Image 1 (cartoon, one colour):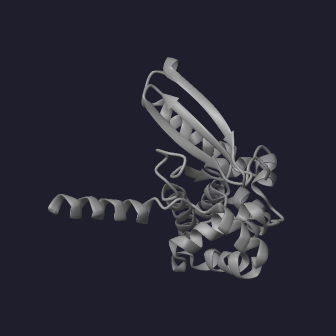
Image 2 (image 1 turned 90 degrees about the horizontal axis):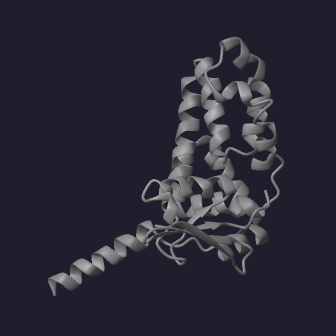
Length: 217
């Protein structure tokens, strides 16, 4: 009986921390009512992200793949070697002052990009804007937490859910450190909701990573 109770508790803990993200429901919610199920949550995330529950963070983060955003991760990637390049390392106060206004305009549109948040932290650090830097750090931590809690990656049903090919590769890097590279293999599966499931294998270990919504940005 005691063993049964312990097993039940472990199952409950697993369900709480690794509840598979229902991307069909998230897409439905954000498509039918984007104001309530995305933009309202985004406004909270911009100023006080800790107010959002994990369910709301899931809806916001993964829902961003199914709404039109004027400054996407794709836009950021195209500018990463030009506009954002100085902010990818320690920069001077003068340079930070030159780029902060435009950077904030892009950040205010889409604060759901971890790389952009890193850049904003560097800018604010150079300007000694401690509170703004802390806000960006908190936002990034919650995004990382949301990805980590999306699944344990041990099965298709509990795949780790990510938004970009770069995040898929990050999961691959984690797996690659766990076994000989010669034993590495991968296969991909296109899911009915448009997502792409990648199964990475090194030795006997497998990791399932789900690219929500596919490759479009």
